[in-house]
Length: 116
Image (tube, rainbow, N blue to C red; front, side, top):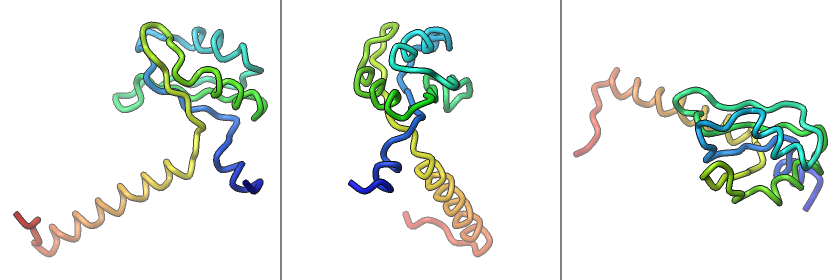
């Protein structure tokens, strides 16, 4: 794996999902902090982000160690899913949503309906 491929697949930032809604930042600091110095934790609080969090480590090796040990970990009655944060995936999703909205606007402007 080249260094470019490695940097794409690994990150200092982990995306955590399937978190119990009652889990606090302090709970995550306690759990993830066992694997290295944490720069920041952000817990999702919106309708689409509830039950998720981002955990940013100071060092990439600590993030990898946490991912290796905590993916599938049972925390507060939930099995959490821990993944590397890949910003390009989010950008791709946003781009796709914009293109779909543009397509829908064109269909409406030209009075084109979906085939039934």
